[in-house]
Image 1 (cartoon, rainbow, N blue to C red):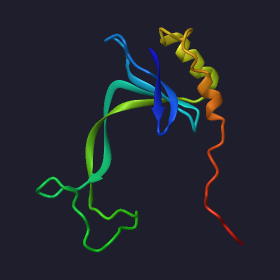
Image 2: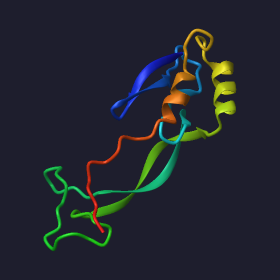
Image 3: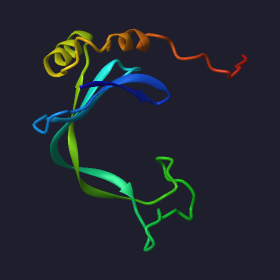
Image 4: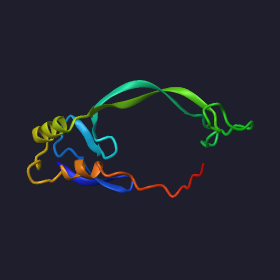
Length: 130
């Protein structure tokens, strides 16, 4: 089912399952990249860098400042179970997918968000001089 949602501080659309046999947990349209991101119910194991925790469960901060990657905390590589993600990138394929899957595809005006994504971001207040 298509629903109105938010991505950051902007309105977008999301797809949510309404049946237990759905193969996706959710889908959300990213306004900036104009991509429909699908999050599957299927999981995989993959390696990720995560913050190292102390004995109290708090992030273990470094005493020497920041590392080369800009982080001021220790990290460790862990195997995590994550959901498969799929990205539908063209407007035509997004529409085909929605028409195939969404029960309210005909009554929900999701194409308005394709046009909204084309709007430029607000200009910065930063003043630069040469």
